[in-house]
Image (cartoon, rainbow, N blue to C red; front, side, top):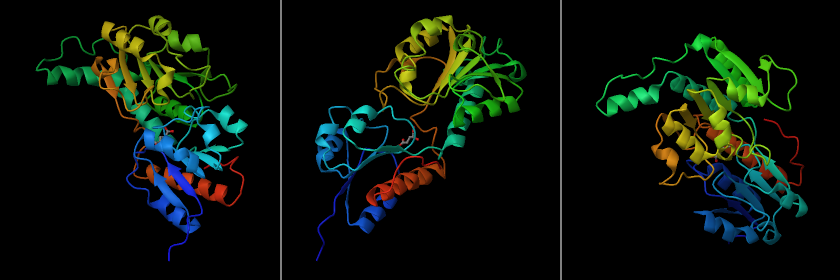
Length: 315
Ligand SMILES: O=C(O)CC[C@@H](O)C(=O)O
């Protein structure tokens, strides 16, 4: 005889290889696991969900919370609250928890790899060969790494990692972070970083203050030949303006792992912009981070189901 389910754990569309950990937890607590096949199924599952496990591939807006009357907690796989209206969740008395720290090294490595590849003009060189051409003028005016001026925006866990990686190759690293007053690198203003860096590496959360930070005007004010790397959140950059700046050559390259809308639309202008390295939100992945992220999320569900607080959890 099967026992009646105690409740439902709803999982947003995801790219994990499997949900074995989530299934095991649901079984242990006598819950039903409902992995939503797409955003519509996710939305339809909200009224019945006791726990919502959300990825970057779904959103929870103010309009969603009124129907989530059974929900005890929202658990975000990864970091950032940008796809969740936290004020609406708070008003609905639903706690929201993220899973920080499971992929800092991975994300930093990805940003560093993109920055170095672009500083050395690798995508342009590769495209030239693929188009049956040869070197032309590619790379003749690039700074050597020991003279590279790198600006890191955001000195959290990941930004610090990135800064240390660039320091290791002798680059001059400066940083901007409105919440940091002391650092192992020189801190300076946002404008200074944007105007005087060969590589600008973004490691900021997406908030009302940072949305479209790298706007058309900001791009126009950046050093000619600069490179932009964004592995944090797509909404930080005005993407169509970046595509134009790449096409005009004012910006010499862009490494982008996160986009305002994911998956990236087929007609998105960045897809055809030159000198880019575009990756599909995989900076965080490695042979250990996927499991660690799922483990961290499942642990938070366990806390929620056993009535324990979700705040102040640090991996
Ligand atoms: O793709 C995911 O599900 C997790 C991504 C996550 O690490 C993040 O970007 O915060």
